[in-house]
Length: 147
Image (cartoon, rainbow, N blue to C red; front, side):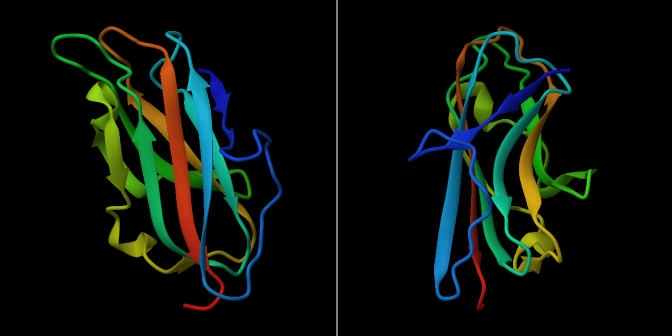
């Protein structure tokens, strides 16, 4: 299993968590994936600062599976103090990466979720591609300190 590190879409760097006392703000990370992407791989995205409320999580991928019947699937969650909650934001079986697309948080508990310490948003591949294609995988999270 590999770990694919995403970077901030604007700066191209892995950044520390950010805090904004007013309004909703977004962090978007992008990871460049190769055809070596496999079942169990983890794609590392942005960090949610402690005390901020998560209002939305999104995954957007290029077409990463060119098989006639694509198999690629993933889930999006977070790592909190070293513990993975794999489908904390987007449940398993999401297929938008097969042909390219976007999916938003679909776990009811993720709306307005707040953490007592920083957490890292991650995507975990739950089914390998039938025919893997190199491309980009974007992870984004919207949050606010004052819902």
